[in-house]
Image (tube, rainbow, N blue to C red; front, side, top):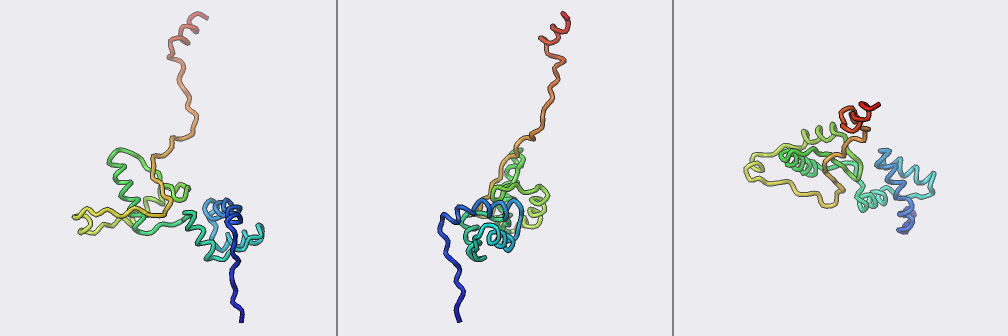
Amino acid sequence: MSSRRSAMFKEEEWARVQPIIRKLYLLEDKSLKDVITTLSTIHNFRPSKAQLESKLKQWHMAKNMTSMEWKHVDMRIRKRRLRGKDSKVYLSGIPLRCATVEKARGRHSFESTLDRVTGKAPPSPEDLSLIIRTPSPPAEVQIWNTHNIPRLLLTDFFR
């Protein structure tokens, strides 16, 4: 009875497929099973599920957060709101929808009386690629009203 052993891949091979894995797993929101299937059929790269999970953790590519991590997000957003700042949450470089963040904050932001009295803050996530920052301004074209600019008023006057 032979035991199946997964192939060991060199770092160069992993580096070659890392952008593909990021695209499939994070941007296209594919499951691990779908990522493995795509890698094996299209890219001739057959990692085991455990190998892929290990690399995702090493590369800080996560789709989900724990309850403690959401509590940390909630605390940071509350502090930013007190300073009058809006917040946008990015997980693994992917912006999370505002509705998703608000729903998770509501679900995970319970604070016990003891924690409230002691002022104990949730610990910062250690290895999570989490960014909370002010959202970028919208990329819309602004139309300026040029009818009240003195120089243009004078040129219109002398025409």
